[in-house]
Image (cartoon, rainbow, N blue to C red; front, side, top):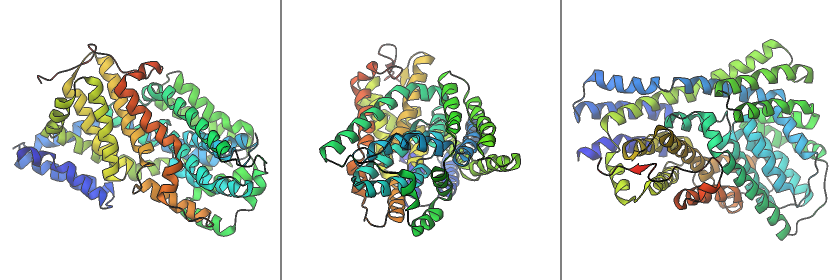
Length: 482
């Protein structure tokens, strides 16, 4: 009975999230309830409860600064023309009915890295590619599956994605290390996705005639623009830049950030490079009118981070600290430890918990903040090894949390992701009635990502993927005596 009471704050948090309560309300309620459990059930003092909560929040301080800079860079990239230049450079290569889904996949993958938002990327890309598909005679369902999967790509590996930053912060790993750990695997997933969508275009015998993308944007109905402005105003700005054109060199800030990241520079420095380079190049490009306008964008990014995600992270940190004080995950940990014969199986079950939590909560961020501390403690309490090897396991936990949250959402019909995508698709392309299974059935990239990461982890085939291999036994080993 005592064990059930200790884990009950997680069930309360999950229940509130499923009911649709915002985490800024659910988090404080669950934290206060967890404190009550610690006080009345475990007889902890008020001071010890506060210390555990605040100590855990203090360990996330660097994450708060990263989130502020990430939001600022995303805001600057959306308005300065970085996103539009990437779209235009890719579209200028030529698009046909046969290749529109492939091009959509590639562009949304790049754009989601540049903006750090899957929802914003989908909102900006759906009007282009759904109408482009309509005019070129492509397959609408194939295209929506492609841009849905591509929009998730950067949200899983983007330096400025809040799910990337939050999942890394919970596991206490550096974002740059996380990106390097999964970078090659993510690239392989994208490559296989391109092959899958191109093959589908051939099998469906779609037309091979190209069209003028900029003219097609001009033909988008006015009511579509109105609906899009209500759903995602920044997407309208980006589409207007795509239509009018921006200089090619506005793609350079994203390139600078990627180079800095893979060179191993600190995350904050990488984000600073992106923000400053967008300003310096935006002036001659004409996308940044004045220093004050640019500073307003940065300020807007800081406000966006502070108004929700940072506050959310503080409550999540406090909640996690109290749950750790309660040792609340011990029963689940013991069960998984009992059925795990080695560390690989334990890690596979951590991934399984992530996808199950995502399905239960129907929200990737709720899954990250609920399941993340659980799988983190699973490794900390039950696995022995060097600090380097244990850090690698935490990197995989962060990847599980994020990848199976973002890509996994694409395979769950009742997930909030699917609901948002359906709303945008219906608003910008009213000629088609979209259903959840339309996105799920053709989202080849999401299937590849989810299946591959779980399979590679369980079988040990991740050793063939550079930088993605988990340490072998006996380098790491289960401590079943504990």
